[in-house]
Length: 542
Image 1 (spheres, rainbow, N blue to C red):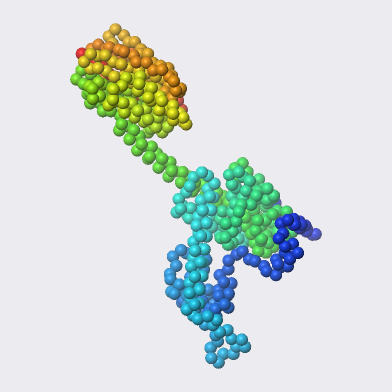
Image 2 (spheres, one colour):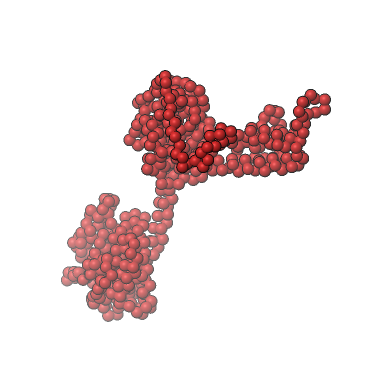
């Protein structure tokens, strides 16, 4: 329910003018006479301009195919963008009286018709530019009316501007008002900016925002009341923002979430009925709905675009994962990387180096989503660039740690395990850092592989170690990311469940073992705690 406050008309109301500071005057003695002798109007008037043109040139612009009293539509600032050539819209008529007409002071053409026509074309060009600038200004104000950190499209801004002006026009017509305007709060809620207006010059939109401090009518309206000013001259303390005789101010939004104010003005003293207040309240609600609809529509488009981009980036990230093609006749290798969303921070990779060694690695970033994907891509790139040169696993981890540490800004921390296997001898060198877990699983049980607990990019001087192993025929080397063995709450399983499942399937093909472990993962893990998961399994057949 909106409470209305009627401003009483009191006898003897008077306004006290403040004395201007002397240091603000350039010519204090002559300023008053200059202001009175040379009044300046800031509003553009096409009728006045055409009258001045006629008096200066002696030629009167007349519209083509219109009534004689109509002004040339081609030079009207309110026309639509598509305007035919000036020659098709206007003709020049000499103001010199015809023969036999009685005229005490005939007006003869001052300049030739060609010169007058050239001048009119220049005036028309300036007005068309002014009209285009006003349209762009209205679009920008409509875009800024959203008051959020999104940028709506130009077409959407134009549509919003038209809807706001149409709402103001209807509200003014239904309440018998002569003008209407929308003022919206800035981000600091300390200023009110004119965003849309009807019945006023579009140049008013270029005026700076007015401070909320001292705007008594707006402050009262933002508290949820309708402020009615029957005569602004008798109530100057309400600070009506425009020079009209009467006005009504209502809130846009609620007292808890104010957005701005709606003003309706009249050129004559009047009172406002309860029906007028209700019409204005409905108009304010519709204005708020239009602004919110525009914002939500643009957010939906932005969200869909971001989701589409994330999906494409996820496909690109997945394309870097290796296929299950055999690297060596005596070895099986398999694995998977499962992200909680389209993008994630887990990866696995393997290859057969030019020297005939099996190189494989599994990494997991501490971050998830797009940030984790960037970290994972960086670590994977560092790892894969070492394949064609002689190296040891500890050297790869040290290089990755140095690169990530130098990145500085952002969370580049990650876990990584990397191995080199000699196919003929079965010897393996492996280095691991962070929370990644690695095990040798055989018929006689399992044993963990030592890992440096420090994450990559956590400190610059971490010492990484090579673990020398030798696996026998039938043994499995299993590497699991932190999320895989983090338990059901994080979307994984426990370390004990992982090892027990592998022991029961140790004679199965590696691909089937990996698929079975993936099916053990919880399907509906809590989104807030779920982590990206990865697994790598290597078996020596003989």
